[in-house]
Image (tube, rainbow, N blue to C red):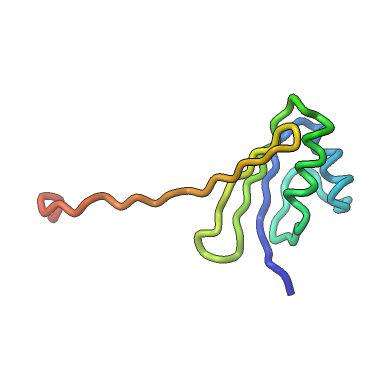
Length: 96
């Protein structure tokens, strides 16, 4: 059993082709749904070194509620961002 995630990858066509080669998933074009891609970060770091001036964006939505993230790759480096939920302060004037 593994962890399923939905992936959207944004990159140039030549970069996508290399990511597909590295990942080993031959039926993948530019989006994956309910997929187990355990080597996502390793694969994208490697490919980003092949194209050091290009940025690769991978957006993920995991099967657990709230597990959403974006990873940016450039020249073998990676940064991950997760959304922050900020609730407004309660104001009685808002009650109707």
